[in-house]
Structures are given as structure tokens and as C-alpha cells.
Image 1 (cartoon, rainbow, N blue to C red):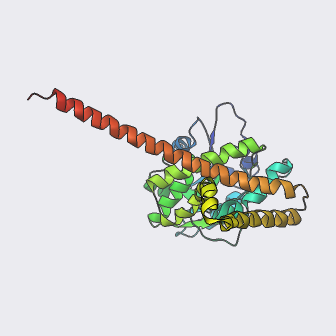
Image 2 (cartoon, rainbow, N blue to C red):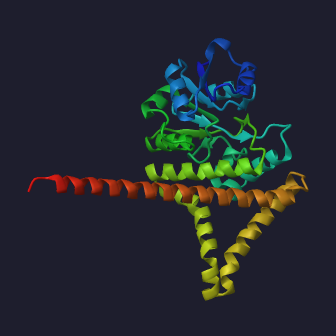
Length: 323
């Protein structure tokens, strides 16, 4: 007998939900499928609310535009036949019919240069295997309901990156997380460079907030864009004092960008990619790094202000105390 699956889809009020049509076409017993549409403006809180209402053994989190394959629910159910599997996720690919830019963004993010180990979120990589929090994405993530409840759900003060924090917490508590490259959803990427810039600026901010709460040594790699930006700012001084050798990092980075762009343009058969891909790689890295820096400065200034307020309050209390 198939286990009951509760699909939880957070949506903004009044926004269409294409995910529902794809779910209704799924090859799965209707009486074993529960679809919960939760309206609001805080996805992590909406997902928790949906989980509290759910009656299924398995929770499956999708975004409002996540289009599942007809066999997706059966594939998920079969994975949970193994009692030692606690969560399963897969990649999110760009659907057919999207503009060229949207497809190019998906292709760029599916490379090591574009997203490092997180490329598994945007392109099927490898085989069915144990995964880290960097390889699964929140718009295509399933988890046992009892495991989700034991973990306390998503952190409602964290968005984006709330799914990364949850899966990191899941692994640190000894639960298993699996990656299935064939468990694919189709979901559109951003359709303009401005939207992409805002997206990765927000991702950088979310990553810094997550690192401030649960830092791990493996997360240091996410500081690479920030280090690159810092080097760029200091380069005029370094170049003046150390000479031409200081341009070597730029040459290496440029070589990686253009070689990867040529490879993608050839494999994806798009001449326009020779222009589009370099712009995308630089934009992704710069905006992510700026998001990290902005959030770091914001948190630092907030802590300094709180410290000043506490000292001020102590000083006033001391002055008002009877002598």
C-alpha cells in the first residue's frame, strides 16, 4: 500500500498555483494524496503551518510553480520503503518554452563555477546517494512527518536559506538525507538580469544569517565571492606596491569564466551564450558577495547599537542610584 503524502505549497495571496495542475496529473492513489495550499508572505512559516495541518506520513514541499513529473510521487514513496531514509530531494530544472535567458541561468547554475556543489540543485548529477544540505533545494524536498516534527520544523526567522538550515540540522542530528537526480521538478528561473541580481543578493544575505546561527567549516567556501570583492577593492593599492603579479587572480577567474562559457555554449548549442554566460557568472558571484557583505555589516551595526544602548541604560541606572 502506498504511504499517504501531504504536499505543502506556500503561496502569496491571489497568486496562481501551477503546481496543483501537475499534482492532479500524478500517477498516485488520490486517497493517499493530500494537497495543502497555504497563503501568506513568509514561506518558512507557511510550510510549518501546512505541516501542522498535514495528515500524511511524508511531507513534500513544493513552490507554487514547481511542476512535478507524473511518476514523482511514486518515486518518493518507494524511497521511503527503506526505514533509514528520512528525507529525499532532487533538482529543479527550467521548463521548456521559457526564454533563452531563463534557460541560460539554469545552465550556468548547473556548473561548478556557477554554484559549486549546489549545482546538484539545478542539474541532475551522479546517482541516488546520501547528500549534504548543499545538494537539495526547498522547492523539491520531501521528509518524514515524524522527523520534521522532531526537528521542530523550519526556522521562521530565516528566509531564504531556511531549507538549507533545516537539512543541515537534520544531518547534525543523525538523520539521513538522500539525493535523487531523477526526482525532477520543472520551475522557471528569473527572466531578467535585475531579478537575478536581487535573487542572489538575497541568497547572500540568507547565507550569512544561516552561518551566523550554525557555522561550519564547510561553509567557508561561500565566502569566496566576498573575498574576491575585497581583493578587487584592494587591488589598486596591491598593484601599486606588488606589481603586475596582482593581476593573476583576475586572469585565472577570467579564464574560468570564458572557458566554462564556451563549453556551455557548445554543449547547449547557443551562440548567444558566448555573451550571456560570462555576464551571468559575474553577476551571480558579485551579487552573492554583496549580499554577504551587506548582511554582515547590518548585523555588526545592529550588535554595536544594542551594546551602546545597554551601556547607556547601565550608565543612567548608575547615575540615578542613591549615593
